[in-house]
Length: 346
Ligand code: ASP
Image (cartoon, rainbow, N blue to C red; front, side, top):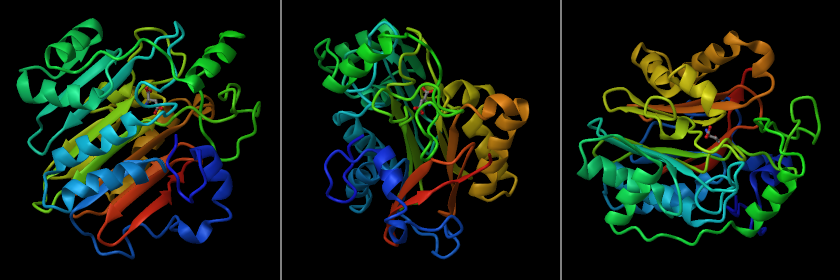
C-alpha cells in the first residue's frame, strides 16, 4: 500500500513495521487503547496503517456532522483509488491473472449490501452501497455484479494489471504455488511461517475494513479488498460476507477483520465478536475470544496464517486481537489520529 506515514514515498506496511521500532513513540503502546482516552464520537477506525489515509477521508464526512454510512463509503473509496497490492483494481490478481474484487457495507439499521468477484469496476464499495440502497438483495456476484454496476453507471475500466501486480504475477507464475500467506512482523522470507511472501518480500493481507460512529451515535462499516493474491478464480473471502468480514449492530458495536478469509468465515468471525461484546466483553477481549476460536480448532495450522479482528462498542471503546504479531489498525477521533499495534495470541 502507499500511505505515506513519514513523508517517505512508497512506504508500505512491511517497511512501516520495520521502521516502527524507530518510531515507537508515535505508536500507542499495546495496553493504552481506550483506557487512557475518554471514548468519543465521531470516531473512525480502519485496519492496517493504510487506514490513516482512509480515516482522513471518512473524517471529512464525520466532522461536518455527516452520516457514518457516507463516511465509511468515502474512506473505502480512498484506498480503492490507490495502487494497492490488496485493494481495488491495482490489487494482485487470482491465479488466472484476473483481479476480482470483494466488498460489503452495513449501516446502523442492519441494511447491508455486498459484491463478490467483481471485475473491472473501480469502486466495489459503492456498488455494494447501491445493492444495499436500491435492491432487495444483499450480495451480487461475478458477472451479475458487474452487469448491475454497469447498469448503474459505474464505468468499465481497462482489462489490465497494475505494474506491481504484473510483476508479482509473473514471479508467482514461476512456481504457481498456492500457499495462503501471513504477515508477521519481521518474518524473514522463507521462514517457517512464511513460505510464500510476495516476490518483493511484502506480506499479502491488506484488506481494508473500517467502521465509524457519527455524531448522532450511529455506527456503519465497510470492507473492500482484491482478496487473497493468486487465489482460485471464483474464490470469495470473508470481505464480502456480512457476519464474517464485517458486522454492525447499532445497539452493541461493530467489528471487521483482515487475514485468511476462510478462517473468518468458518467461525462467522465478526458476528461472533459483536455477540461477545453484547455479552459484556470489551472490544479487545471479544476479538481475543474470536482469535482463540480459530487457534483452538487447529493450532498447528494457526501458526501458518494470520487473522486480525478490530472492534468498537457503542461507547466508542475499541480494541483488536490477531493470531500473530503484525496486525495494526488506525484510529481517528477528536482525541487522536494514530496507528496502534494489535495484541496477538501466538
Ligand atoms: N480477508 C481477505 C480475504 O480472505 C484477505 C486479506 O485480508 O488480505 O479475501
